[in-house]
Length: 309
Ligand SMILES: Nc1ncnc2c1ncn2[C@@H]1O[C@H](COP(=O)(O)OP(=O)(O)OP(=O)(O)O)[C@@H](O)[C@H]1O
Image (cartoon, rainbow, N blue to C red; front, side, top):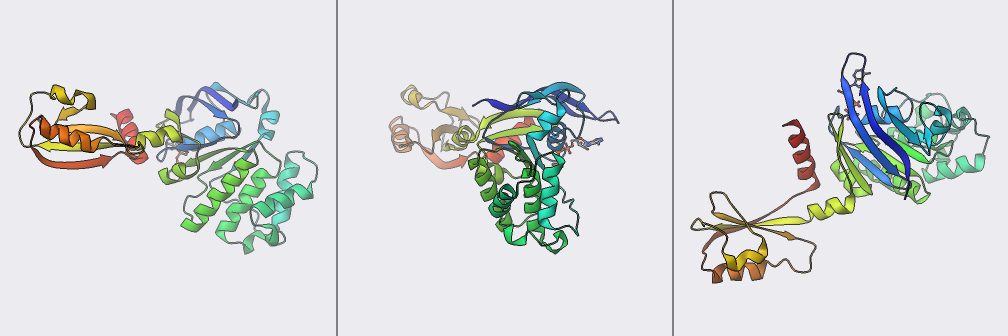
């Protein structure tokens, strides 16, 4: 897969002197769904706004489909659709005209068959002649997506598509996003919801305080999440991990009273039964055992805390 959007060393200092982005480098691969996860004020909207040409970067370089966004703005912008966070639509306009108008803005010729396809995909076709003000909040969000897709972009940015929407609409949105990916659209969505990133992303990028902390395949993150720890509390503290148990890579902590064994929950065998019998064979007496699992949330919180320390 090649990168369709490539950002290198992008910085943004707003007029008041606030540095919202501190050297962001990121490659977005053609055809993927990338979730940008970060707390409030992390810089997600700033980054998207820069890529979409609505905010100027202070330094750095960004290309979209090989077009440099400052020197080759029109060509780059034509490849991008943006679904903004806020609903800003003309209330008295009909749905179909709203979408047609957006297509026209990019200099694309009229193509009613294409517009019908996207309106059907978004379950808006039977509302095509309704005025925006007659639509529910969820439908207005769908119209925003239809507008963003009207000029057949290859990359779609969704800025917090499910902020403040109910669970049902959130699931509908995820279905829509999956459908667009199947059509070959590259999708970048920003979110506060770890659950959302888990549900639909191929890769997850974590951004905090203007810096990208990691970008990883979801499967890889899930493997990390799949790691569980078994805590074995002993009645007596140990000097060291007994040699007979060396194959388990145990850690000794909490005043040498706890042995910690890390295992993979997705593995065929956890090795726990064997370990416990060998612990007994080594003459150690157990006081208690407990397990803990790290989640994407733990990883995320850990990363953000580490950065602010
Ligand atoms: N026009 C502006 N002038 C000055 N500071 C700004 C401006 N726009 C954003 N900021 C600041 O830049 C930082 C990043 O904001 P941004 O909107 O990019 O964050 P975000 O990650 O999208 O947050 P949220 O999840 O709350 O939307 C914030 O501290 C914000 O206050």
